[in-house]
Amino acid sequence: MPEQPRVIPRRAVASWVLYDLANTVFSMGVVSLYFSLYVRDQVGAERADSTYGIITTISMGMIFIISPLLGAMSDRARRRMPFLIWSTIVCVICTALLARGSYLISAVLFVIGNATYQAGLQFYDSLLPEVTTEKNRGRISGIGVGVGYLGSYVAVGIGFLVPSSNKPLLFGLIAATFLLFAIPCFIWVKERGNPNPRPIFGWQMVRESTAQTIRTLKEGHKYPGLLRFLFGRVFYTDAVNTVIAYMTLYAVNVAMARGDTVAAGENTARLVMMSAITFAVIGGFAWGWTVDRIGPKRTLNIVLGLWLATFALASSIGFFQLAVGWLYLVGAMAGIAMGGVWSADRPYMLRLTPPDRIGEFYGLYGMVGRFSAVTGPLLWSAIMFAVVERGGAHVLTGQALALLSLLGMVLVGWYILRPVSDAPRDWEALRSA
Image (cartoon, rainbow, N blue to C red; front, side, top):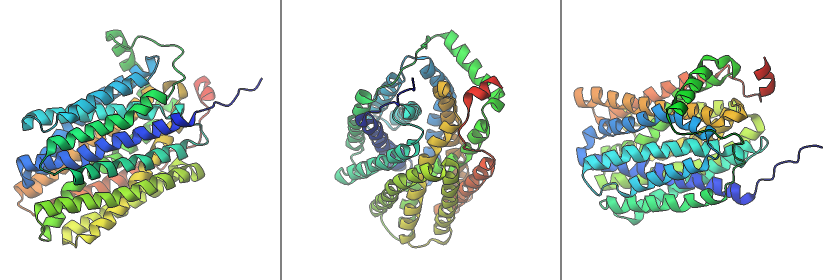
């Protein structure tokens, strides 16, 4: 008797997509916008880039180390959803407490909150097979990206409603909004579950999971293209994660170089972000459709080409101190490209992943993403320290050089990925080979 096709309720798909909106409220509101401005308020414009880079590096370093272990734990557990719920709750609590104590306490809260947000992304991505089929995976992933970026409107909108000086209220509203939009996913996304759950706590689990990860890396030939994809992903996500983190500071400095006040510069940064968000929403839907039409690999190649053009134009603005209006074009290009990266990236990874080890492999996927999020801010901070703090150059010149380094990262990532096929794998045949 032929197997009946799996029926996925629409409310499960909608709830999964809505979580993308929820966590984008955090990533845009805290990581990309307001916490970097909070740091700027505390340490000054000259030290803001390097200081924020160090704080971000510490946070991403934590999750880089534990990502494979978290993935292995979720593979062993009966369900992945409790991991997503608890990581979200911890992130929400840390966000709600930002800017309510000393600067040092807020920095520690950001480190923990961002690390748990990143862990939640890992669990969220691994739930994609529960709400999709092979035929619609690109489209649903793209819808998630497109709807997710609507969360950026929410985050920017909160900044317009609340005075920028009232950071505690700002972060509190972001935390409440994150939780509100996350709850439907917790309730309505139903997993098929793990038929063979194993203990997820204790040293035995740590030893087994670590050994399994090492074995996977050593036996990369059994998973065609996996290790090369992960290595290439380090470079292009390095560039994307870094520009997301520093886009606000860059926009403020461009505006101030043209004579604006700090407040006017922050307003310009919000408007540039709105431009990026608008095109990211459109891009998410369009790229998701493109993935299903031409495949994730070809789609990602087009997107990386767009990133090269975006970084070239963005760095020119800093070098030649071009008019602020050019920032809006950069924002539009970056928005379209951001929507494309995540729309193609997740389906590409699933093509390289055996179905019974999604958690573990997404742990590796998350690990390289976190590694790039460590190295990117470190590289940016090092360039700013050497060129601006020690060399005495204008802040915009340092940031323009940093943007050129990101262009180089994208180019390296594209070159590494060239041989990796996105053709569906016959995992049974590969296991018996």
